Length: 327
View: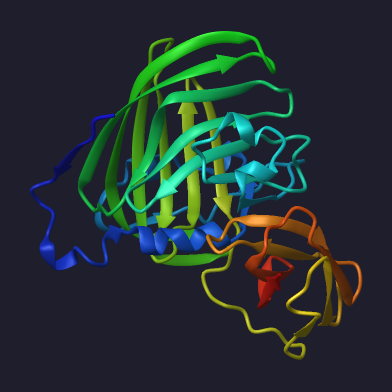
């Protein structure tokens, strides 16, 4: 793959630090849960996609969740632990919703210090795509005013084994805006607008606009258009930390280190909408479960010996973290 970088002449060195999406910042999202709401397209102002420049404000406060669609909670996990991860040996991350695998696809990615590339995906219907020439989605560092160009090639499958088509094309990505984004739940500063156009040999072209929180890599707002079909989605996270009124939760793990199983004893007023995530040292989720009592049993299953982190998520907020050691 060939990549061409172009810096716009108006890029000012004085803003080069704050207006740069770096891998160090982006990698924070790899260990976080992305809570996504599909928006009613009619509530999105299409003019936001073409509002570019430095120091702009995008007002998307009018967005309304599409009726009948659930909130999607995406996490990054270990590809080899998914049913068809062996088809994507180059992937080091898979993004999916653990509770909606019967409805949503697994997305496989190769993410490292210089780029995010799409390796392929696998849907519940067994329809899937495998890239021979990966589709580059982001580059690092990525500066305001910068553009990258890339090529890709993939094989499309209509089911588990049947090839339906081969496709090649290009992707052009531009860091076209920097400023403030207003969502229904609040205002985010230090936001980057990344605009991409993808061509393909089967047509038609598609465009996407993604607003990223530069400080942590979280996707805040997404608009995609392909041959008249439009999808709008937004992150429902709060831009500020909300102080809980109840007592600070505590957790005790025993035994730790452990061989086959361990128990987390949690001090929490309510377990409604509480979940447990276990991640490896690269931030990939390896286990996920709903919490139904104050005593949570963790089974080693196929986990290798090593150090893992765990997170307690309550009402979509991270309230406790800790370490697990498997011997």
